[in-house]
Amino acid sequence: PVDIALDHDPLGDTSDAGGPYLIEVTATSLTSSPVASVDMQYRTNGGTWTSSELLAANTADTWVGSIPGVGTLGRVEYYFIARDADDNAEWSPEGWEPGDAANGFEAGTQVQVFFDDFETAGDNGWTHDMLAAADDWQRGTPVGEGGDPTAAYSGNNVWANDLGIGAAWNGKYPFNVDNALHSPLIDLSAEGRVLLRFQRWLNTEDGYWGDIGSVEVDGSPVWATPIAPSEIITNTFDDEWVPMDLDISTEAAGNATAQISFRMESGSTEEYGGWNIDDVE
Image 1 (cartoon, rainbow, N blue to C red):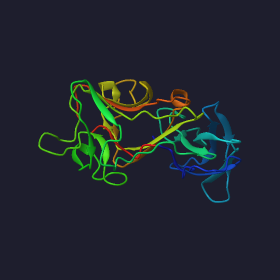
Image 2 (tube, helix red, strand yellow):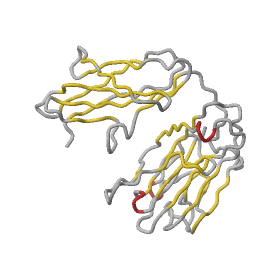
Image 3 (cartoon, helix red, strand yellow):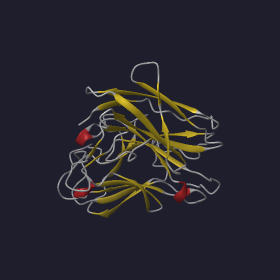
Image 4 (cartoon, rainbow, N blue to C red):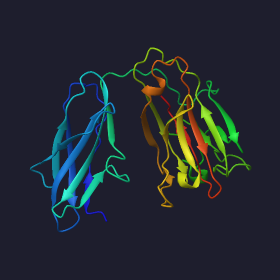
């Protein structure tokens, strides 16, 4: 049961690499046991997690602290664990365990090396293929079929599994498919650190049942929808555009021909809307 409500506005990207970065979180007990402590775990560039105990502010239920600056350039991730006087714990962001999900922001100067919002007349080098059963990738304006959005994140067009336009389409991926959308080759030979950002609207059954939406760089997975440890339902059902921010430096930095792929695999139990993608950078 939820014993503590945690509320925090995640920090956004900043050009200030020197920091510190001020943190404020509201922790409200939902029982008669008061909040006793709020601990923040943070790390930079995927390093070791560091613990910092937040301080109770003068405002009721408010806890404050700070994260040190990164120096020159880096990604900062952090999450919270609150405990009440009975040692009940709650964490934010939510996940199976504390730290399974974290807030994150970039500190330092960034340079955009690639961007596509899919608004040009042609496909700009984007391709798609079928690995099994069907290739249902389409570029166009979403119409809300099968759990898809009713509009693009920006402009008019997205890339998606089955846009639901026309009699032969219902907005849902079929059973037992394996297909992928591939970016044009991107020259990242001069880049020492690379972030992939895009907007997603994704609907899939849990990977336990064989439905997996994933992101790959040159065929190597860098992100995927969850696979529950048992028949627990953890379907991914987006009902709004969700920003994604992935550090793909290991796979892409220094690569003159990097290629981003969005892959959809499905089993034989349910059909859902699959990927909708916009504003890839």
